[in-house]
Every structure is written in C-alpha cells, then in structure tokens.
Length: 84
Image (cartoon, rainbow, N blue to C red; front, side, top):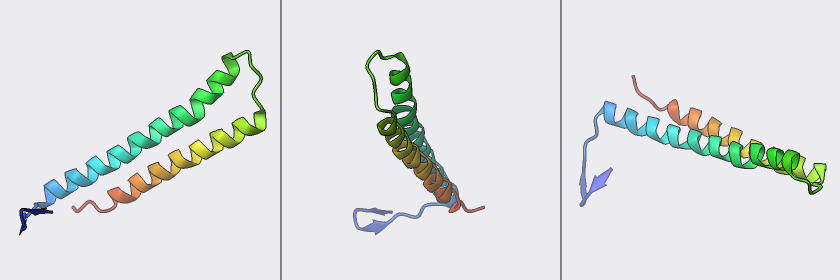
C-alpha cells in the first residue's frame, strides 16, 4: 500500500483483516447472486400466473448458480493468503 509516494508498513494482523474483509465481500456477492438469480426466478415462476419456459428458467438459474459458486470459491481462495 502506498501513501503519498511513501510505503506504509502494514503489520500481519492488518493484512489478515484486509484479506478477511475481501473474502467476506466476495461471499456476500455470492449470496446475493444466488438470491437474485436462483431463488427469485423460481419463486416468481411458482407464484406467477404467466407461463415461463422451463428450459429458459433452468438456464438462467444454472448461470446464476455457477456465478454464485465461483464467487464463493474465489473468496475461499483469498482466505488461503492469511498468515499465521
């Protein structure tokens, strides 16, 4: 991290907290993607009177589910950088 052209020393605890914050943000995005992309279309298709093509709904849900899982896995990978 640089501040006004000078290096700022960051201790191990501060680096670990920054890593955990990044992983938490990625996991939060994964949860939001699953809620918006998976659960919302399914609930809408169940409660709506309009007919929705099942193949289109499956593709949509699988795309958002894949994004959610990918974000979660990236968050887990980020946590590997924590120093003990």
